[in-house]
Image 1 (cartoon, rainbow, N blue to C red):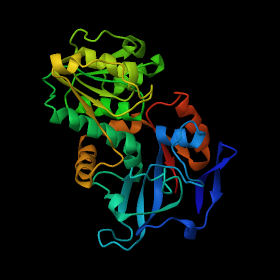
Image 2 (cartoon, rainbow, N blue to C red):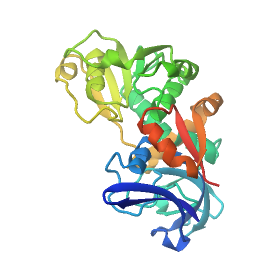
Image 3 (cartoon, rainbow, N blue to C red):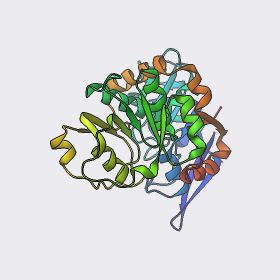
Length: 324
């Protein structure tokens, strides 16, 4: 089978499409013929060697994929059944989705929701799944469309794009934060009512004017600190990323004076029941136009080139990889 193989030579990561014997696939009780995978920021870090994502080589990257069951030793999955996978360390410490086949633990798989196919599922992918978890976190914190404006940072990326589209579809008033003026028209098409420059969130006082009922943050660092200072009383920030770094230069003041909630969101190890609920909602609530607006389709051979472009912030929305 064809697969993108990552190897390390004198500390440098090398990515190359190679032929791999299916017998070399790691242990697992379900083998999947992959139709589509996604190219995520974490994949790009691994492929370019810019992040310490992978510690054991050789590795097939790809933290998500969708396809059909080729063989199964688990009664929950039958041959030919459409399935998808995100997270669980696949593509990091277990061979992942940038290959024609993957062998995985059945517990990691999600049956394809009605209304989705492999391509649509990977246009959503890990990024869209994470966005849905963030929206659910805001809802559970009591943030409704009537609460006020919701802001999304890193809005032109995979998580941000899906979050903007979901929030708009659910009736929220959405503000999008982006560092690229070239994405403004795209974000407006997804449903952003206004667009703010990322530089406006580069610094803040411990408390600022109350502006946001809720926020979805993919950036971290000073941007997250500024959001917290600008939250309405009782507001919630769903934080799922650290594109600008892991530090958080803030104070306790938003939390103890405005009852602000900072809710972390993890998609890698999310429990199965929550995964199923999120995917069912994604299948029902994303508008059909999203699949035309938010995706660039590439081949397996193009993955290294696009991984570099993602790292350099030159790609908007989702990048899906057609495997078969």
